[in-house]
Image 1 (cartoon, one colour):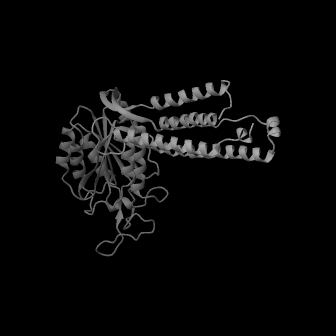
Image 2 (tube, helix red, strand yellow):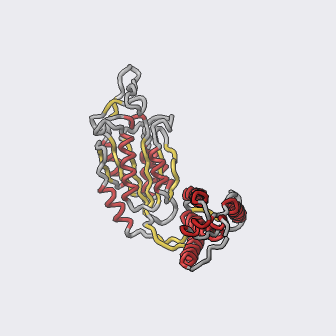
Image 3 (cartoon, rainbow, N blue to C red):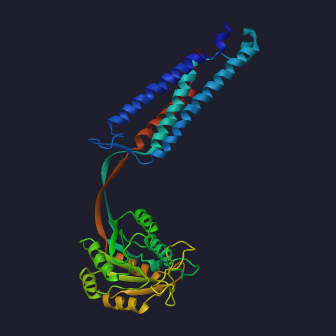
Length: 381
């Protein structure tokens, strides 16, 4: 029996593995192309992956290939070192390159199909039925320069505290949709009503006082725009007005009428103190103070009485806070309590997750591997 019967045919193994990988990935590429994975304008059913980041795990395939090649090379080198065929028969068994390739084939297929399952391929849609609270929550946020005033506990700006309060309300309220508008000298929609709370928080985190060049604190414009910002659906509508209360525009009667007509519940969160603080030119920690026409630093004070007047006119509530984390529990209690009687039935379509297909193939190849390893076999090349 020649010595080669104890050695693996490494060039044949490497060639077979390379051909296998090339053929497999070309077929995968063609299949994914047919289902429109690489096209933004596919026709018909399109395949997508809910977690494509798991594709990095495909790098375990070349690692597996390297491990097999290394082990086969080590075996062949050991055979060469042992010398005579008589010695080899004493210490070693005959080997089969074909059996090693089959083992590699089954292990790599288990890994590859498991990775495809982790990526969660989605093909087609399915109808989901459910209910939602039906509460629409809109924030109208004052982003005038006075919101840069640092009279909150810890020296934070009023706008920083406002952002923190809004994020808490989003996290802890049962509102089904969130909207955002900003105002200074005028009011502007920032985010239409959306069920994506993460998107709402992202928009809130990006707020700053430089968004609107037309300065002022036009609360009437904020109320009027808010009344038009809600949907026409029969849902509970809640407005959170966040401001320091320094209104410079007037024209509140029409705004009150619009809010009442739209049947909006209004909660007013005043940020800052009645004592007030110096208004800086920007939100930067060491920004210089704004000056009036006489060269004096501008002082901003929360106008609590005006906020209370607004609440009385629209049947709302006022909370004044200069804390780093305003206690908005009363607002949350009323929003969440009211939502219990304002449920809406929903029916919508979502992508059909097909992770079961590659997972089934992974389990099948794993089962075949286990059965094949347990079965007796002859080590034939």
